[in-house]
Length: 100
Image (cartoon, rainbow, N blue to C red; front, side):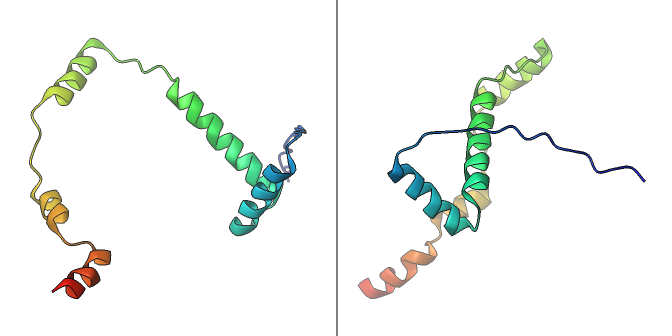
């Protein structure tokens, strides 16, 4: 039977003001997570965002032409979206009754 894959763990130490630790602990508690899990997930998510913002997108000339055409084409009317935008929001229904 093959053994379980071992995951290497590398420590990361940070010095933070007490107020920051308190805020992190409170948020982690609200999520039911440990401080370590909460901070790791937040840091990884932030790192992914930065990397995606700086990712180079490559496409061939035909793909780029199709992309530009899609961006510059006139908008298409979608009746379902118009109907949705004209609908009264659920939180506005009670106030509409109060005003009538």
